[in-house]
Image 1 (cartoon, helix red, strand yellow):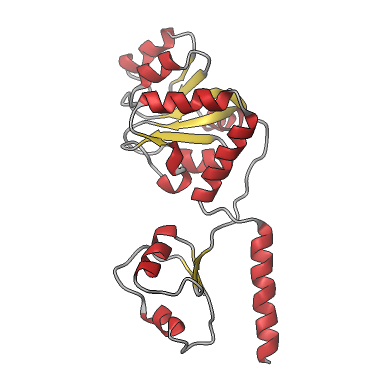
Image 2 (cartoon, rainbow, N blue to C red):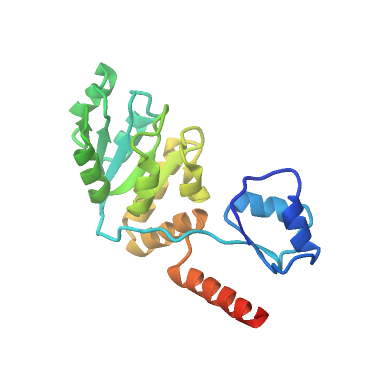
Length: 230
């Protein structure tokens, strides 16, 4: 049985029947990590209840790791000045689908900042395929499914505790209390491709990414069980 339900304070009746052995279903695979933890805390057997994620279609193109993307529709970007000054070796691309305020346009004088007011879908798509990082540090709404698309393009997604738009695509190790800690990690990763790949795996693990082979094994096992029941 596959379950996508959000955490709830009890075990649903249909799951309770399975856990009590009153169903032919022998395993519950939960596609929500918090829901899985909740079920286990309520006494569900960890032999029957396990987390099981999703197969994502990742774009594996080469990313430029000195390029950062931020999408926003306001000038409310947490610690932008500190990030810009703390990462002079990085080219920071800030794009909006609206016009930009004078406050945000003033960052255009910084040599490592590139602004894209009223950016088209084509421009945003290009930036998502070129940049190696996505900083989810803007307040307000998420723009153009930015975080999900950054995840699918395998950009490393970093953010602050108060700015995350889709926490399910961000590794806990990539959520920071302040700009200094964010900058510190970026500098550590810039000098090591193996560390960059390790942190991509952390990101994918947080989003419950599963290889295609895991689903193939699952379906193969289901088919074998069906044949045995005939």
